[in-house]
Amino acid sequence: MQKLEKRLDDLEIKFSYQQEVVDSLNDTITKQWDEIDKLKKLTKRLREEVVNLKENSPTSSGVEAPPPHY
Image (cartoon, rainbow, N blue to C red; front, top):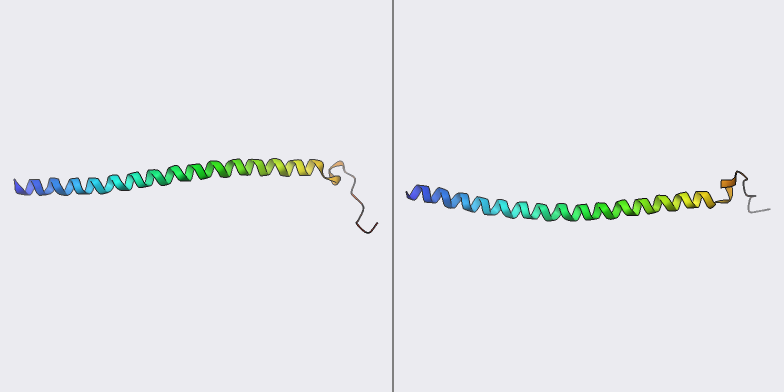
């Protein structure tokens, strides 16, 4: 009976450690998804800004601006 109790105690200890690891991994994954969402929003905004800059640039009409020395 004592051997069975020891095995049960060992299993409980292992389970406790595993639960800590799972909780820690879950927190890490949640933080990473938040960061990924932020980066996606930033990338989208930067793309929009690049498109706006291209559309509003002097060369977007097909006529190239004269060099600065003119």
